[in-house]
Amino acid sequence: MWKIRSKLDFLIVKQAMLGVRDAIIGQLGVLALLVYSLYMQIPETTLGIWLFLHVLNYFFRYQIYLVYIKLTNNKENYPLASALVRLYTISLAFTSILWGSAFFFSDAFGEGYRLLLFAIIIGFTFASVLSIGPIFSMHLAFTLPMNIAALLAAFTANEKVFYAFGIFIIMSFLYSLRTSRTYFRLYTSLIEEKLNVQNALKKLELKEQNKTEYLDAMAELGIGMALVDENDKIVEFNLPMQRWFRDLEGMEFPLFLEVTFSLQKKLTNKMQLTTQDDHHFEVTSKNIYTTEEKLHTLYIFKNITNETHYLQTLKNEKALYKKRSQYDPLTELFNREHFLQELDSARYEADRTFNKIALLFIDLDNFKHINDTYGHDVGDQVLRIIAKRMRHNVRHGDLLGRFAGDEFIIALKQLESKQNIEPIVTQLLYALSKPIKIATKESVMEIDITVSIGISIYPDDDREISQLVTKADKAMYSIKRARKNGYAFYNKNTKVTQDAKSL
Image 1 (cartoon, rainbow, N blue to C red):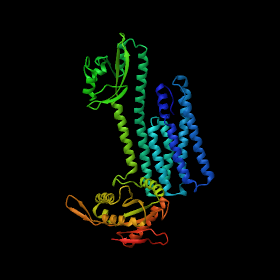
Image 2: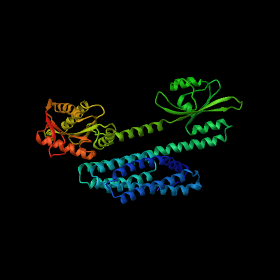
Image 3: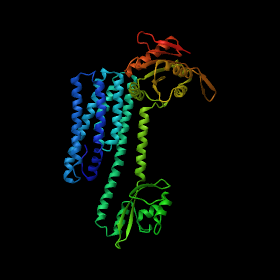
Image 4: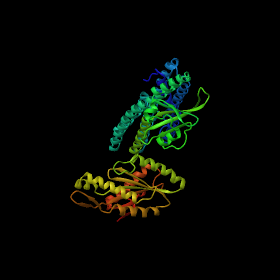
């Protein structure tokens, strides 16, 4: 459990708590959407108690935040601050338990609901790294219970797709812990350096008359300083400036900026500059009067190269997390869970514009034979080529995803009628059924490929995403059983599909 022992500890917690309000608002928004979806399926008493505990806990956590930020950073307040941190950590753990308990409602919804909860918990885990990640105990308290609940739900579902989700949740959680520790080191070093600079400035302000001591103290902290006179000439500089930029005495400051940073204007207030060899500096300026009452400008250079590179690394890792959580690595199409999220958004757009969505469930015919005959490497190449053909034969804005194995799914958006669907599907079926040529070391092989496509239409066939997928899947299997290499629309009135067509 975190204890406040120093000014650095106090500031780290305070900085992490600054995002409390936004985090609570975001989580309440997700909670509202979840409660809305649960309202007609869960007993009102159970749902009301669950919602009340959430709201009460968020209110309690926000009160802790209000008390903490009003505390002053001194030793007398550290015991109270430590107690508040403990209460806050317990509140985070309770929040996590409440979110994990949402899996108890999954029987009322089934697979789609579980997938949504998995996405919410994975999102909360990564968001926690960027908000309270530097405080490991808080991050662990918030993420561990909900991830344990997600794992139990995944591994008790007795479905392979949920096993895959369970493995992904484990990897995401472990990676978040590792990133939390890295973020803590960076976070601590930045705040510690800020404290050091603040303490040094306070100390030096008391001894402003002794300019030499002022410059020496800045040099010990690795802060570069240059004094520029009223004629824009550098009259004094300290050791870090000499180490970074050579002998500057008597050099015109605008010329120094132009040569070193390709900057052709004077600095104002605060700027970040980069040298040609990719060193980053934060530069601030301050007007001071000398003992002769002449106005000089003091420029303070802080080398932030390491911090900049760390932040860029974190930014790149965040982008990588996002890509891994949304895209299938083999085909670079949307993965199942992200496709369903995008389809859910498209549904609201279709309602707003009074248009339809055609959901195409696509299965490669006899793909197992291709894997068994040519090997899985060739099978993977076939899947990539099929994905590429799909991208080239649908419209801009349509959604494409890999559902599982050799199954793909496409959402054709903004359709005015069923008649708009068939030309697109016919073109797509023709493109996907062309033989595939794959070059090997020995020769170029040609593989015959056909596909079966099942189609369901929103909102004609159903308004629920999971049911649309199920019905498109049924339509696909009907054409596969009948003749393969064709497409069929779902028919709700009979056990077979309607308008089945083949090449």
